[in-house]
Amino acid sequence: MNKPKGTFFPLRPQPRKRGKIRLSSKLRSIQLIITLTFTAVTVAVAVIVSIMLYGKFANTAEENANLNMQQIIEQVNYNLELYVKGMGSIFETAEKQITTSMSIDSPLLYERMDTLMSSREDLVSVAVFTPQGKYVVGTPGQSMRLNTQLESQSWFTTAKRTSEISYSAPHIQNLFKGRYTWVVSISKMIQYRENGELKTGILLLDFNFRTIDELSRQVKLGKRGYAYILDPLGNIVYHPQQQLIYAGLKYENVEPVLEYSFRSYLDESTGEKRFITVRTLAQTGWKIVGVAYYDEIVTTKRDLNQFLAWFLAVVLVCVIAVSVFLSWLIASPIRKLERTVKQVGEGDLNTPINVSGAYEVEQLSKRFNMMLQRIRQLMDQIIYEQETKRKGELEVLQSQINPHFLYNTLNSVIRLAERGKTDEVVTMIQSLSKFFRISLSKGKNIITIQEELDHIRHYLVIQSFRFKNKFRYEIKAQDDVLQYQTIKLILQPIVENALYHGIEMMPDEGLISISAELQDGLIVIKISDNGLGMSRETMNVILNGGVKTGSGSGVGVRNVNERIGLYYGREYGLTFESELEEGTTVTIMFPAQTAGEVPEEEQKEETSP
Image (tube, rainbow, N blue to C red; front, side, top):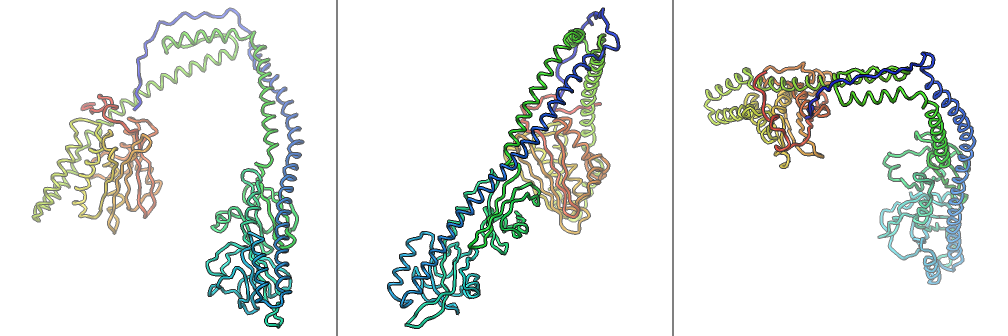
């Protein structure tokens, strides 16, 4: 809680010395004219020159950045072309060995195929299939898996349609048992001999996609830039953020990419300016797309901006220095004002300042007098808030025992006694006794969180009998929170509001949850219910004290919010979260204080106005 500290003692006002020289009214603004004119002309010239330089060099920087990006993508395209050509060469070698072999099952052919496999680390498998999908020969020699649906796989159907080498999109190789490698498949219809008979088959070579992935992943286009690969149909072959693409969390505008084989353009479809560069692999038709963010690759623009900022700063410093020198001759009234202000700062705040001289000095004198008046108003406001806080504490004390609430509770006790439910009568009377004992708290206004939670627990026990078990409640608190202090009766009005405005009209069973925990030196208490909820307008009415139950403690939600603000500061208090038909959650937040941190005079309530 913030309180005014110290006492202000008025000192004897000092005699004021009036200046003997008074400038004419026409010359009172000469400092402003000199400063503004000289500064405006100099800064205007500097800004015009800076704009011209920026326009010239910014365009050059953008062109250089775009050219650099194109060169990087060209290099990636070249490396991938070399790699794909190497894949094609291996395929042609395998095709030649199979077509020139006297028999598809000869040991010499198996030996050559093993040699071919060992020559390339990225070569996963070599296999020959019949047009009907039957496995003929392959290496490494492993059994095929069942239900591979080989005839429906893209590389198989493409090879049957064309006589050229076809390259598939990356996929999981699932033909052989125990192998689930991410591969690119190369396939083609070939002819081979089996038992002296010339037959037609499909040659398949699977290459590990890891090499293509590594070549693409090495592309760095700024901190966030990247490159990705599309097949001729617009399917993504590689993307560094492929999981985000599949999850729908990232979007790539591929339609302009598919229209061109060689292109560079500026794209803003994602909300950010990005340079896009497109190149196409001749063998596969894949499109390599480079993406660089405009604000990252144009680093020269930022450097130029920094230079111009420093340039303008230096100009301003020089202009200010000259202006200060020129205005030095008319600064004596200001120095006199400074001496007078110092005297007032050490004396009586009620003493006005009347310094004559230049127009600016007179205005400053008036503003300083307005500031003194504002300080006095703030001091009066602090006194008023302290009085308001004490009145609020008195209102809490006077309204702790509400006759209507006591009458309803005792009436419920009588009905229970008439029905012979002695255990419930004992429980209800004990809860009522403990409820009022904690409410009174021997005149203390500050209690522990443990006591406040016990108080609301007894209140809920009483209300559960009155509402005939229409609701359930749960109270949870961290052990280290219970020892901290709080102003009392901050939970009951909120719980009361939840019962009468959230749960009472519900057809189903209600639930009230109360939790208390320590977060970064703050006590956070949450009261949640699954009631009917409130609109924003209703929440505003409650905070303004416009809703009262008529059967509770009489302490309103607005009263709780104001008391917390007065004790701990205006930044603390209540916050509401509510959805109609869903429920309401009220959060109370205030600083964590132990018994030794709370002033002793604040722990007791006033008993009279």
